[in-house]
Length: 179
Image 1 (tube, rainbow, N blue to C red):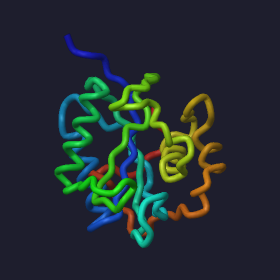
Image 2: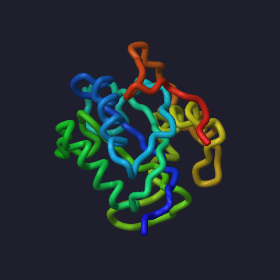
Image 3: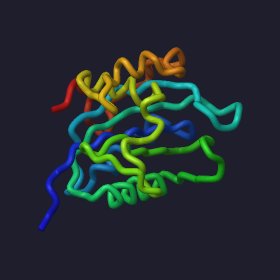
Image 4: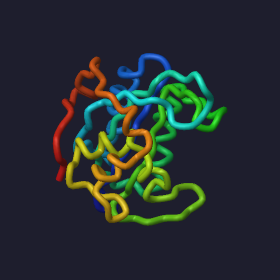
């Protein structure tokens, strides 16, 4: 018996290599299986690194909404496989990376599991997640609060910039609200 589809929000970021191409192919890779359906893609934003070593290049970030029949830990494994495909190396916490994929919310699930905490424990403080998410889904809420309002209060909001080199991601133009 298969699981029902669950709406999930994923945040993607890259600050090494061909960042926009990486994000585009990563979105395609994430939804290249029948258990994961793409619902929407946010515009790409350029951001300063938050934490980690000094001197890192700026990140490109976006958020996608998907629906999936995968269990949360199966989706996490799938995200890690996509990161590996894009040569992700985990040597320095918050260090530079070719690709980072985080599960922000998985339906209404709240989990304090050591492997996967949901909602993502730092998402409510990070404009690089909240702002593109609010552009994708203006009615989105995290921990009972508007993601747009959370983004406006986030310390990194002044460093968010539109990315001028943005093209369609995975052949899907940035969209407005998702259902």
